Length: 96
Image (cartoon, rainbow, N blue to C red; front, side, top):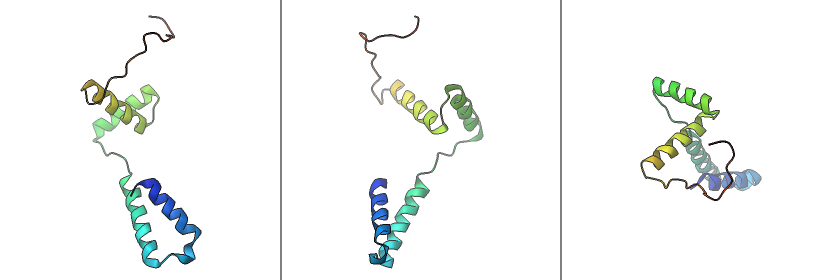
C-alpha cells in the first residue's frame, strides 16, 4: 500500500470513526506507524554528515535536496541515468 492510499484510508476512517471496527482501526494505525517509521532520513557517519552540511550550505540546498542532487549526478556520471541534454538552439544567459 502506498502512502497516499494509506492517508486516504485514514482520512476516510476518521470521517466515519463510529463505523470502523477496532481491529480495522488497529491495522490502519500500524500501517501508518510503519510508513512514518520507514520514511526517515539516511544515517551517515560524522565525516560524511559534515561534508554534506558544507555542500548543502554552499549550494543553498536542504540536506534532502543535496542528497538527491548528489545521487542524481553520480547516477548520470556512471550511466545509470541518461545525461540531461542541453538545447543547442535555446537562449543562454550569462557570459562564456
